[in-house]
Image: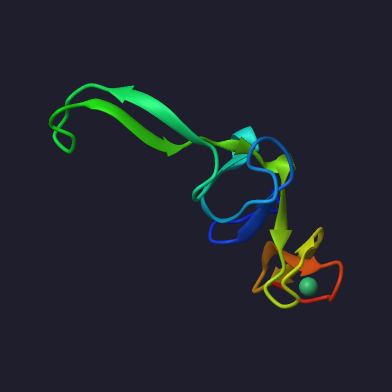
Length: 105
Ligand SMILES: [Zn+2]
């Protein structure tokens, strides 16, 4: 996954195209993410502890990760990221770098 929690992304397709939002959740196994304020769906709920009357609530639905682009924290532009594997203290991890300005984040 090229997107992580807390990233800011821009939506590339669908009704929310052009919208920006913060990534609230990632589902790596499904290639899906939840972006704050994007793709609200209405959900019918039964009464519960938190929502005593039940009814209709709106909440964000997961979208496919291929429909978003990460916004670089440095140059502020939607960008693709270069992934690189590094070994740090004998553990492998990935770093990401902006293809436009080279910023690692
Ligand atoms: Zn950049």
